[in-house]
Image (cartoon, rainbow, N blue to C red):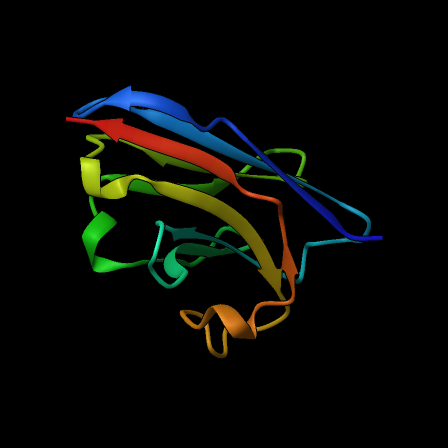
Amino acid sequence: QVQLVESGGGLVQAGGSLRLSCAASGRTFSSYVMGWFRQAPGKEREFVAAIDWTGGSTYYTDSVKGRFTISVGNAESTVYLQMNNLKPEDTAAYYCAAKRSLLGLRDWVRWTYWGQGTQVTVSS
């Protein structure tokens, strides 16, 4: 059974940093694409970042470029999202996700596996 478990969310002041972690288990993810999405109240789930498990290619939504970094852990079972210079508009529930291909990367309905989410709140 595939499981994605997020951690690392919390409350931070604007300009601060957080690192989210996603622990993956249940299958070999070396051929998967891993991603992060976020959803604020009353808004649609939004693509944030994605990475090929090999770590060779990364993808970001424009609003987080230069501030967020997605990476994989040495054990190849954890994906991280380092978030720096956080802004109040980054406040949302953040979800880890996995899929087999790069097709439909930014479309949340095209992703197969999901974690339960972790809340990030940025105060002004």
